[in-house]
Length: 416
Image 1: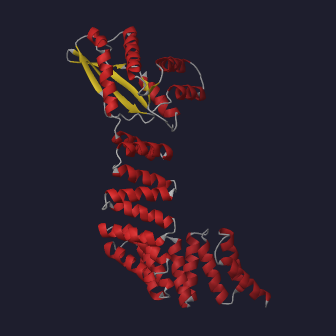
Image 2: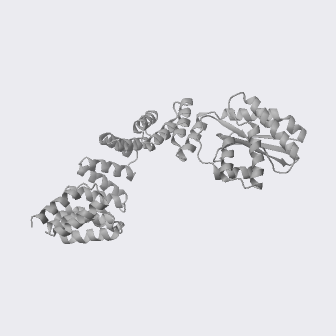
């Protein structure tokens, strides 16, 4: 019966947000049918009542009557045509909690064994801190309920550590429930102000929420606690990059590279920042290192080619785009970029060939239309240029140069 309920939970309930610990005590599964139905109900009720009474307000407990109603309703679910909406509403109402406490009763040798554990909800992942009880007969089983409950409460109390809240924060983080994850990481940090990984993971959540200033605070705290924590520099650099604070981002990527000189992504990011600043030589230097580390890293050739293009070193740009096309022969942007370099050299025939190939590969890519329009314009083919500029703008209405190019081409036609 409990397995059916679990399947309903997973089928019908989405992500929940929990303000505090709330435990639902489920009936135990009698693996070997050691108890009669009435004995099983009695054991569950005594255990649940004892757990609630001894809890003394430490946790919020789902009322036993609500859980029993769920199980009774589950029997009705199997016998009627109640809608999925009704099932969902009833299950959510009863199990709006953070954890489920349940166990199994079985026989090992000549003894009755009871094992009880906590499970996350709704993932139903078993948490540490379970308790086992071994007795010789059913009378002792019932007599030991108070002792058993006290052991379980002690185990749960021992779980109120920073690590427990961190683990729960990770569960919510992985489910992209950012706000609840932050609450859990907050509690982990409150219990352990030097919990480096909690600051780091909370920083990742703030980063993903685009709350960049808070992310920077957390990554900075990580670095203060562990100055050689390389990924804190990398992620803080990424956040600075997204805040357009390029100089600070470069400092962080540089520190990361000092700690890990073989990580290509750091050179790629730093090279991109140098490029954005117009420092093409430093950008090229970073792309050179990537290519030394990995001669088949296609983006490094493409990015270095673009830096050479802006330096008007068109031959080197073309050489890099050739390498890039060797590695990625079906990417439209590669042909469009090489077409730009040929256009820069004044080799219009080669430029047209590349723009045509880019359009063939991706007819909805604006750049090669704009590039081909420039070639037609410089060849005096203004009507064809206008068609291409109009196509580029239809695909990308905010294209940075196509509208001005179109106006210039129309003026040429109007002056004929």
